[in-house]
Amino acid sequence: MRGTTDDPAAPGFRVLVCDEAEPPFGAAHGLSLLIRPAGGEPLVFDTGPDAELLRANMGLAGIEGCPAGTVVLSHGHYDHTGGLGAFAGCVPAPTVYAGRGFDATRYHVSGHGTRSIGLPPCVDLRPFEVRTVRGALDLPGGVRLVSPVAAKTFFERGERCLTLDAKGRKPDTFEDETIAVMEIEGGVAVFTGCAHRGVVNSALAGSRAFGGAPVKAIIGGFHLRDAGMERIKATADALEEMGIERVIAGHCTGAAAMRYLAARFGERFLPLKAGREYRL
Image (cartoon, rainbow, N blue to C red):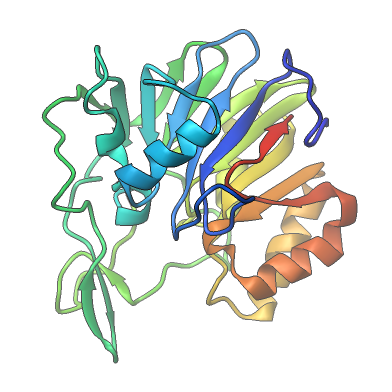
């Protein structure tokens, strides 16, 4: 596992948007990655919350125009879809892949009020060909999309505050959640946007997608921000048991989980930061 070395032939990814950033890159609550398979076509995995920020960070990274012919949306929350407009002017426009129902209305409902957190009104899907991912779908270069993520673990459960209606009566089960699984040396790397169905479930789904291949790296938001230490420890235990060599986390993972994972995995752990490039 090469980490952040500069081997241009190795598969890897560049963080375009994340909650933390290397100066002079901008930071925002959200995620966008430019994934580069070995010998295959690059793809954009999520677009962050804002097209202007995404364009600015791509410019700082020396990326001009449309960096990929494929955009994958891991799920329909604003912080993963809001930047899609950055690619609306591309000729041709990239093909967008998303799970079924990604454009449903979505809400965060709590004692502090109700707010819409789904696809932002500013996002216009008309310039794009949108293809639905259901089951497994192969992209060029050894990347396979999987949607939905099967719920297998007993400790990874959804949050009651995330719903499909403004009154909080219909829980969001994230039927649209989509992961990207990339072949790398010795196994696969699994990319998840927020892991709303669980990061361990995501890793297991990635392994199954390639016939039980070892998961060498798990990358993305792990959605442990509001989790207690019992779940954080159970997550780390399961990832350790799977023999994962690289845990690369950020965005919605949460400060407590980031600290625990860093202490638990040591040099095998890396934080996600906008502007950084990682080799796998």
